[in-house]
Length: 88
Image (cartoon, rainbow, N blue to C red; front, side, top):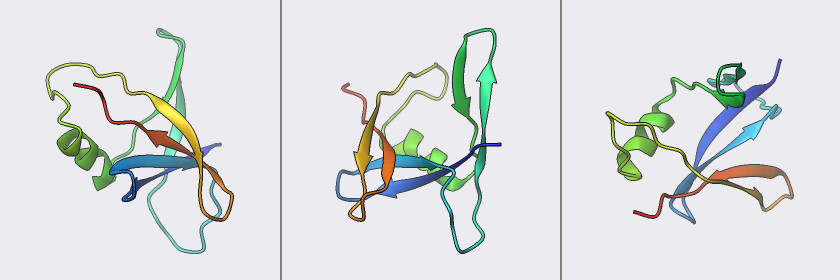
């Protein structure tokens, strides 16, 4: 089963995630889930990073929000997905 690691990207003041990352220490990972009704793939993470995304991106708590994701590379060449800030 695929696992997701969510983290902060301080250089861009954004957040990102990596899939199936090999970590040498214990951390909280989220399962990737398929939503048959909306034919979409997503993940639910209970780590504090998700609450930070809502706060820093100023997302509405009472409405749905769709965020743009772009692919980026770390300094050592690993691919990650950057969760872009919404243009409000």
